[in-house]
Length: 419
Length: 165
Ligand code: SF4
Image 1 (cartoon, rainbow over the protein chains, first blue to last red):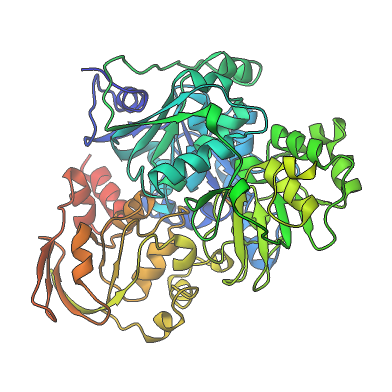
Image 2: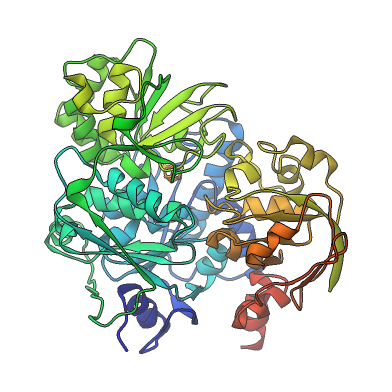
């Protein structure tokens, strides 16, 4: 019987010829990831198992959440990560100033590739499905066991086929595609399931669009999101991925529990209202909603294309007097390229604050916490109650074009409102 | 193992940011995490929860981040079992991995209210609502996931497996 992409990847990594949805399998892992919040607690569990790490070249540690350390406690967390790195000679460690946000740097540096099976102690590990691999988030204990054994257990998920038709119009971003999908299927619409993207519309999505979309599979409850490998993928991984990789394709008779179709031609800029990523509304239909802050960055929209889109809109404008606009390039490389291309000058001239790469405000850690009653338009992925600060603050999720236009007008807006 | 406890009832999509907000993630001490558990939606929880009380949620309980701090905070609050219509998947595996039983009962959660007294057998999945007289059955744990639960969590399970290898 035919298998879909996720089933094929899980089968090969479990040493099986075939797997089917619902089956429990134990898989060998190609890459294991953790950050400054999730890694330290796992080290204690790891010690309980005893022994060395399974492979010091297949572990990635990125201190990105509370870094550059915001206080003494968070400095202790980063130090615990650093000590582990030195003790076990972990090759893929990205110190402050040499990396950025985990899900931005793993694809950027070619650490993840098509066909790979990656787990990470961070829910947005699903991002790497954009490259045609299987990747998913786990917790501390799974991570500890993975560090020791290089294995993890999985229940083979059912798959939802997301058929993208048409061509992505100018002015629409991957974020609009994903917020529209979450609106259609709900925040638990893909619970325990895979979202497999397909259809001719895929080819009109840039790699940054796909990374944004796969990143938010978890916001629909999904175990992973996965894209086919095409010429866009191959162009992206060329000169980045230096190891052999496998291109996986779904069989023509692969099984899906549901098919959802989105016609990209019909998409318009959208925004997800508090306090759920599925409260999606068209920017055209929301009226005047005044805002206090804009955040452009994160593992969802902190890549070079996001910086370019925001810069093109902010160019020649100034940030509204009642708004703080905080721009956070997702990696050192994105930061540097943004300087070279003149984007950072545009942000600063417009009156925005530009920060070194960090998760920072995305999870309400530091660098832009909201007070009671404040509203923020953010290119991040979660708008849960209290996510970015006070429980009575509000987060509106949007793409970089909506965030930039909103920063200028002081209310939720889109680029056409500037004319 | 049959447990009896009083219900703390929450709604749909209870996310890990409300179970334990990021501002408390600098610690992994279970008792400290428990002292902030649910603070953003229910300030009375951490203060008044009694050992043996049971949390009952709606759909997609534990959605959001992968922070294992969330099930750890719940377990350290003295909650021996969480019941929900459905669980978000990372929360679900984290619960199993740390030895916190999670029972999924779909729409039947609607027949459980705050303050009800439940008797729960985590081994068979049978739940009796002593207050109303209703009886529900949770979906059983599949395959070796049950063995992980029986071992009291994934670390013990792996240690036992290594010993026997
Ligand atoms: S940017 Fe936000 S969502 Fe992404 S890894 Fe950091 S905290 Fe998590």
